[in-house]
Length: 573
Image (tube, rainbow, N blue to C red; front, side, top):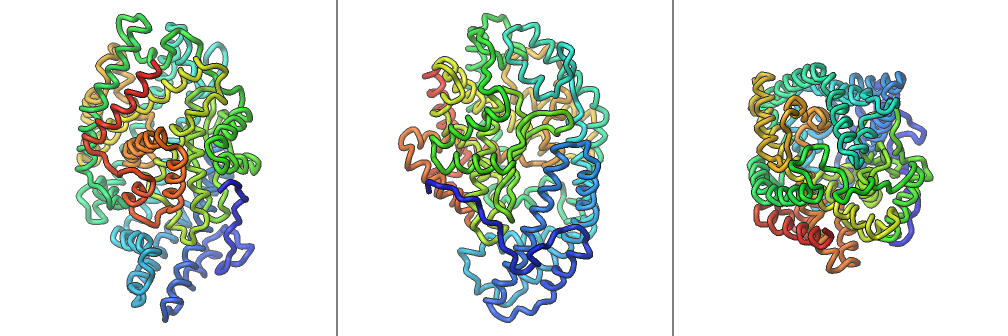
C-alpha cells in the first residue's frame, strides 16, 4: 500500500443514480419497498441487507454534511434550518422504519444461513437496536439532539477581548503558553469569566437534557440513563463496573506520576506553588512553540510528516486537502472543538478543527488524520455498519497516530531543543488526560444514576470528583468559582454522554502500540493498518489483538504502560 487513489463513490444499485435527500415523501417509498419486499432465499436476504445499507449510507452522508455546515458557521440560517428539518422531520420517520426493517431481518428464516464472519456484528447491532426501540422515545431523542446543538452555539459565540482584539476561546487559550506569568493569569481569568457568563443558560440546558434522557431510559425499561446508554453505545466488551475499576487504576497508578511531573515543573519554574496558568508554559522560560503560521502551512507540514511515517498516510490527507475537506482554521461563528466526519457514501472524510497556531493544534490535526485514514481504510466494506467502528477502536487509530509521528516532528520545529520540548509536552499530555477522563466519566456515572439531584448537589459532587482526580501540587485557592462549573467546557457531557472513557481505553492501547513501534516500527505500522482495515467486522478485543496489543485496562496494565511513558519522559527531561 504505497499509493492512494481517490475513493470511488458507492454506486447506487437500489436508489436512483441522481437521488438527493430533501423531503420525507421522496424517501419513504424506498423504505416501503424494503419493508414489503419478499425474501425467499439467502441470496435475496443478502441483496436486501445491501440495499438497506445503501439507503443508510446515503442518509448518513446527507446528515453528515448538514452537521458540517452548522458547525462551520453557526450563524448560517439556511444550514440550521436544513439541520432542524432533518432532526425533526426525517429522523423520527427513519427511526421508526429502521426498527421495522431490523425486525424483518431478525425474523427472517434465512438469517442463520448467512456468513457468520461477515454478518455477525451487523446482526448483533440490529438486535440491539430492536431491544432499545420505544415509540415514545422518538420525539424525545429528537428533542435532545436539537438541544445538544444549542451547547455548540453558545460556545461558538464566546469571545474575549485581549489587547484590543476579540478572539475565540481557542485562540485565547493558546496564550496560556506565554512566558509572562501575570499575562497568563490575566488570560486565564478572562477565559473563565467569559464561560461563567453563560452558566445559567448551560445549567438550564443540561437540566432539561437530564430530565429527557432519564425519561428515555425509563421508557425503554431501564432504571437509569447510564445503563440505557451503555447498551445503546453497544458496550458488549466491558461493563459500568469495569469503568469504575479503571478510574481506580488511574487514581493509584497515574495520578502519582502526574504529581511527580508537577513537582518537577514547580522546581524548574522556581515557584513556591503552581497555579493553573503555570501548567502550559515552557519550564525553561522559552517562548511558546509555534509549529506553523497559518492553516496551509499546518496542512502541508502534516502531510509531509505523515508521508514519512507511511506514504499512504500522507497521500490520504493530501487528497483531502486538495478536495477541500480540511476546514482547520479558527474563525468567528465557527463552533468549538474538532472532529473527523466519515462520509460512507463518497468515501473521502472531512476534518473540522480550530487551529490557533499552537502545538495542541498540530496534535489535533495529527489525531484527526488518524481518524480520517481509518475511514479511508474501511471504505471498501460493503456494509455501512462495518464502517461505523466503536469509539474504543476509532480513538485507538487517532491517539496512536499522535505517538507514531513524534519521530518526524522535526518537520514542525527548527531545532532539537524545540523538538525535545514538543515531545515532552506530548508525553505529559498523554498522562494528564487520563485523570481528566476519569473525572468526567465518574461524574457522569453519578449524574445519571442520581437523576433527581439538585443543582447544588451536582456542584458538590463535581467538586468532590474533581478534587479526587486532581494533582495536589496545583494550587486552585480563590478559583473555586471557576472550578464549580469546569465541566461545562466538556462538550461530550452535553452532546455525547458517556462517550469519553473510550479515550482512556484507547490511550492505553496507543501507548502499547507506541511501545511496540519503538521495538519494531515497520511491523507495528502494518499491524496498525491491518487492525484498522477490519472496520467493525470483529469484536473490539479481536481488533486490538490484530494490532498486536491487548484490550486491557487493569491496574497492572495501567501501571506497566504508565511506567513506560515515565521512562520515555525521563529520557527527555
